[in-house]
Image (spheres, rainbow, N blue to C red):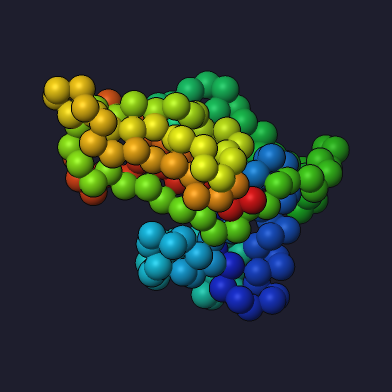
Length: 176
């Protein structure tokens, strides 16, 4: 679950509550300017962000990977929605306890060279500062770019397409 706190206590508190109600293991808070490599993220324009500006809590529910529709990820999402509905007393059921790890801000790694992306990690991995994430090799097999975690975090997203071009986003890490 990703949320975009605005620094407004009332809406941020209700948004955090909504995120916790999903019952997922991770919540990623991304206040404006909290991703070093993308200092103007998140900008205006997303439905979740605009809802917050109007005083309406909202979250991004992101599960799975590679743009695939996987049955277990669909079921996880549906269970999260049901959990929210139970917490809002919209349907009967057992309220899940709030026990998510909260990550705040993070880092995004982009390819600076074209080549073949080789990853050493997978989404969900807990990373140590200095841990190698992967590298890009050229057609001759030479390493042309390495990726190393600058601080502890959780790998939230990884691009698994083999061929990369300069500017491609490859890793998204939430700070612990």
